[in-house]
Amino acid sequence: MTNPRAVILRAAGVTCAAALMSGCAIFSPVQTDLPYVQADGLRLSIPGVEFRNLVVVVDKQGGEGVLVGQALNRGKTSVEATFGIENGATPQTLTIPPATGDGITAIPSTVDVGPVPAPPGAMVNVIVTTREAGRNVVLLPVLPPDGIYEGIKPS
Image (cartoon, rainbow, N blue to C red; front, side):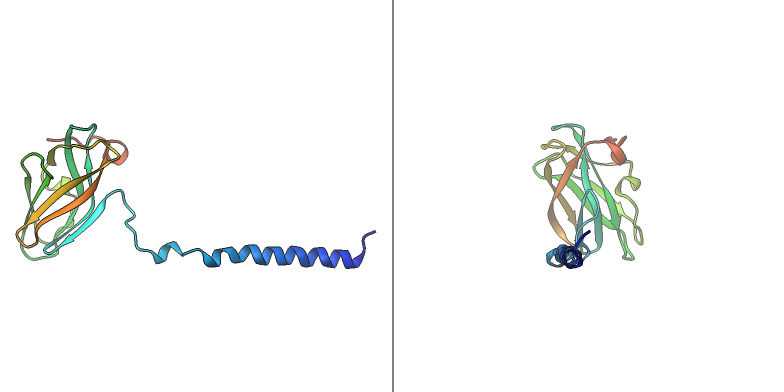
């Protein structure tokens, strides 16, 4: 037989331990309170157009890369945007129609950025130029043509 006092002490100990352990989350930040991009790529907001989920897809360092992402033009006129790797090949110009939110690869066949000086898994500077916003340099992730990017190749 167990002593009733011991049963009460054990129950009180378990209750206190549970209460102490459940309070650990009080000091942890709530993830939804912190802004973050829930995609592979990065965002670039400039006057006239907003780009989302921008990545460069290439199979190996030095290979021909393709810019992938979404272009949002909420304006009433087309926006001419030029894309290129910093110190790379001749930039490619893309016309983004008004009131559009298409993927960049859906507008022309692809947006070729030329040889990519970084391997998949690294980052590379891409220059985005528009008449409205001027020259903008954005550091983008370089990803291999796997998963959702499978089959994306320069034109």
